[in-house]
Length: 283
Image 1 (cartoon, rainbow, N blue to C red):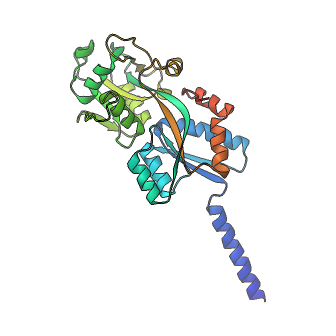
Image 2 (cartoon, helix red, strand yellow):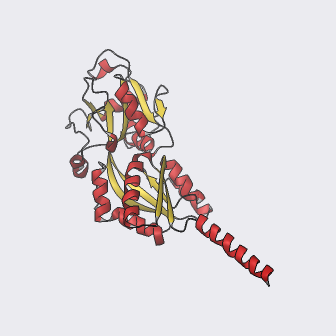
Image 3 (cartoon, rainbow, N blue to C red):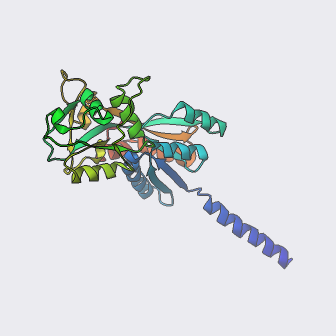
């Protein structure tokens, strides 16, 4: 009888450990580096208001977020681009149904060092710079110095968006690629740091990363159009030509704790956090 009782106790003990380890009160959020500060800000306030709940937020890029939601290693994927058809197909093969939620808007800032005299560029000039056709700052009104190109790595949704909408000018059949000389950096913060330290560098990232150590470029659709800086008002109005939605993806419509966190992100308080982190609310 005692032996049986001990076996039952042991079973309950190990079952309890397994239940706790399964993370029933935790949410794993992974993906876009552009959104990681926003995700962490959401998580911090959410946990303050929901004691006992835990939300872990990590970056790695939009591609990492999609891979994680497909493999079941996260509950929510953050993405600064739409999921690709091949990713949807892979998800369905694994019984995952990606569900898209637009959570914020972002202006993609092109930045240079504050010492750089160049302050405005048209999209055509930006395409020329990042494809390597323009290699010297004097070609766009700057000093006679070589341009140092900085880009996010290929796994980044920011990289994909910039290539599709700037290098390829929104042409689905475009073949333009980043110049081989472009330095592929692992995060938006890495680009911000390099631009701050290098007077010849140019890079891009979500406008939430702009600081006094970088100078955002005013961008025009073409040489005859208005040059517009990346600000919240200009993104909301549609005047700034390099802007995009930011997404959360779940496996099917969110339920339970995942729904509770998503609802918080979309709530008035959650959207105020969007604004405080220099993104644009969707509501």
